[in-house]
Image (cartoon, rainbow, N blue to C red; front, side, top):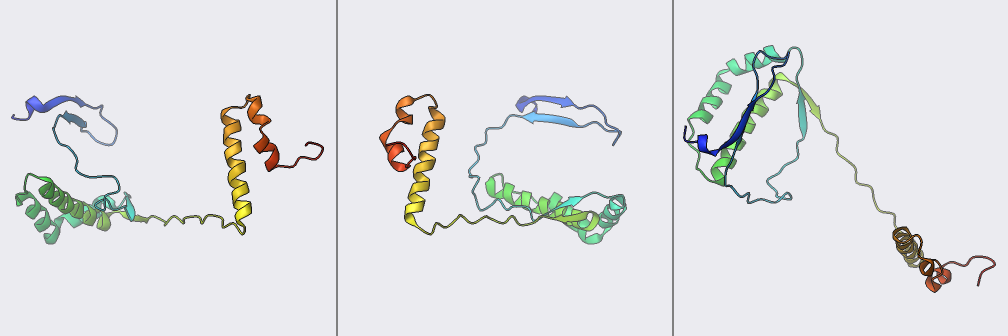
Length: 167
């Protein structure tokens, strides 16, 4: 009841053929400022994802019935976490581990392929590298001002390229 004043709105979504329940979305106002950056080392990219299969339901029921998993869930429920970012991080880590362990035992694991980073072309000659930079810069200028006749007839442009029949 104490949170009612913090609820901006909620909605009951339409029922789907997947369940006889309807999802309830709640938007709660909270005055929290995140103290992280996107490049933070706390964000670890996923190594794999999980795919739900026809036998996953039975596997999940068997896994949840396991004493070790039940103990892990009860331990999480009974744990009192600090009401600060360290407590939230600890709770999030424990809950993620529970879900991850359940998914590993009941779903098909799909591993992500590592993306290869393309190497930049190495120029054999600094003159060629400088010429490429000049051409790219002039091309960008021409693209931004296609009707600028002064740019088209710029002396730098003519001196960079020798066109047969022009001086």
